[in-house]
Length: 544
Image 1 (tube, helix red, strand yellow):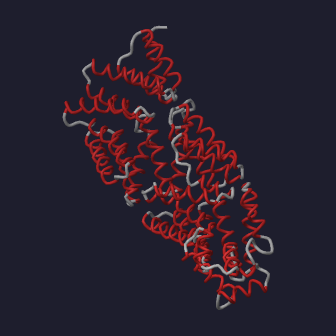
Image 2 (image 1 turned 135 degrees about the vertical axis):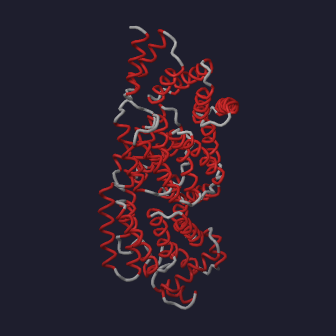
Image 3 (image 1 turned 45 degrees about the vertical axis):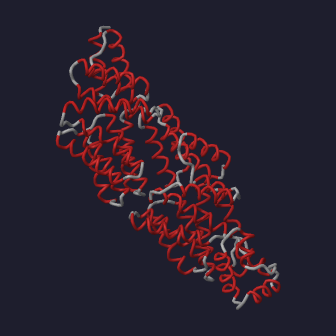
């Protein structure tokens, strides 16, 4: 077989996105006669799409050298930028920085050109990661402008995509999604090169998930899946695609399919040397396993996620709560929040903080979490984030004794979960609605809500939630008589034992203010005027 025929076969396969055939033919042609820079770049792209990262880097480095020999410094600079970015992604930061510095030197010699924009993209990404969204947005906007001015569609899409992410984090959600949508249209329309297409797809979906744009994420994930299915040999981006699909499937209650997709994603991300995406895939596995009650497997998956560099919170804190280790759960979620500043990232942790603090009887800290979450939801409008905030507020109001206010907020959350087709979250809302109805004396409605929740949990296979429902359905409804919560009963017994609020706060590891609120709630629920009367009531009704 001649080098020329192999080269023609490789070029034809590359144009048809037949990545294995393209890689093999171009590799054979290269063995027979060294490829020119342009064909080496095609060999590199084919290797990348097949998940052969080392081969990609070697071929692209040779392409860079070839472009320099051919007197094409700007093409060499582009290759250097891609080398720098990809080496940094796989953890070789020093070499990555060196390649970016080389690209910068080459570009500076040429003056005004589109390639200057490619150097701005990693700058925007770095500043976004550091939380400096204003600088990130400015750099990305300049990159997009250069792409538009020089007619470089890849550069415009990368710049618009990075600018959209920064704007979303700045609270300009609508403006940010306009840019992401524009970049996605170019990707869907086949206007972009293969690697840039994958970057834009995955980045846009990640932005949707981060900003709780569920409907958009669902739409673009479907488009990404169709792009991937048209190239069945492709490995690059498929891991992230599967991880995104797993998260959406989980939300829609298709847990077994979500678990399978997450496992496949973990494997493909590992093959593509994308540790960050592998960590996200492992975390998605853990989330499904925890909800199914397989705590041992869930813990292993959370540890795997952490090993890949993915923070395992709030899932691991929820797991500790489910295991009954309240102290570990509280410590973990407080630590995670202390390290997290961006509002959207904090919004992922605050619901866990509220739930764990309610379990610990610290109503004040739970209320603070609910208030912060409500403020974030107001700043970043989203139906899904609004439902999360409403549900947390409802749980806090319920524990605080304001069942009527809780009922309003919980009903709002439930309606949104229904509209979003999120059966697990809807069922959790119904459990809280049942408790609010029961506290208001509407036992019939409470039983209807509990029955509906039980049916949903059973269909999903949510064993821990079903077990909790068994306690709520008991005559005591999982609470002490007279509407007291377990924590209020605990406080009442300590009051009856003659303990002061300060002593109770020390024993329960909560604030005196929290204890005072519990005492106030107890007096109201028992309809007694004083601590002495509450003590007498407790002994008379055998609550101590």
